[in-house]
Length: 388
Ligand SMILES: *Cc1c(COP(=O)(O)O)cnc(C)c1O
Image (cartoon, rainbow, N blue to C red; front, side, top):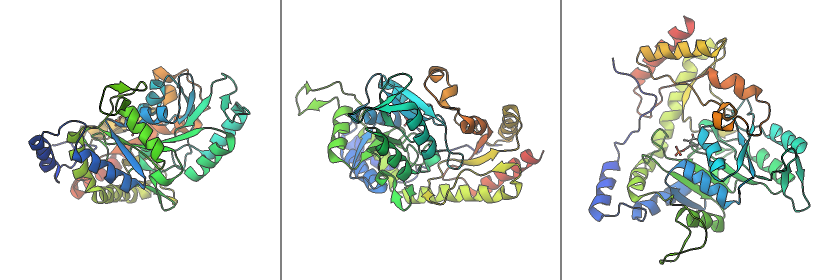
């Protein structure tokens, strides 16, 4: 019996043709027509004025934080329920993540919790700089994460941040390309910079890759400068410590072919999510769907269910193992950052939501090319396991 995978890329479009063009033209490195074309496509799809293609989402987050002025010793507010890369990007700046709990309705930063935390735990200087009361560290930025591609309530988050003082907003929108909030595309929601990932398991992939998008041309230019060794002109003059974070033309060739099918891939992801949600609707006493608040249109990067009825993590693990044994690639979800070894001592708020939630989440096969009969097999097996 073949295993139904969690996610596999669909590379049946122009990927091979564009890669062959790279080889034939010898433009395989970080300069090339596909990089420019990919940046234009990503900017258009996200509603941004500018885009910089980079080698991964993590690199993009790091460069974006440096570009908005995050420095060694600063704090950056990050939701604890995220992939470890969000926190690592902060640590790569020499800064520390300040880990906040999430909103149970969205699995994203809770604007009210953010406001409460800033008001209670920070002081604001005459220069507008916000400092963490307990440690004296500067709070340089907030990084909302658009969990599973669902936009956070950015109107409220940006208003809270601006009301408090000089704090930058950089969005980890790794899986959110193609999402919108109150009709606005992701790059137009008020953040200085928004970062996407094109890793192999994302809806659109370059094999590996990322992009940083923004509305301020000067800031986007600063990101481009930082990610290309901070080089001045064509000679070997560099005006700061930059990074080699550029995407190659090979990666961008795959990315362009993928972007041509963005609408199709998003429709498939949303159809798969809706099919699971309907199939488990009558088990509402045991399972809850992934969040879908009305004001946002997410990308449904992953699908699955929350095992509300489970008494402990062992019960959820047993259910996952049972599905795995039946050839269904059911997986766990992100373990919150405050429970991870490198960040146990990072500043953090209480985490009632993330601690109740993360181990109950089961993700199910959701490749854009998932055949309907395979999804029915997943549904049948999951229902049996839930009712066992
Ligand atoms: C995928 C992902 C990243 C990291 O992207 P890479 O391209 O793998 O470096 C960061 N944050 C979140 C929320 C992600 O899902």
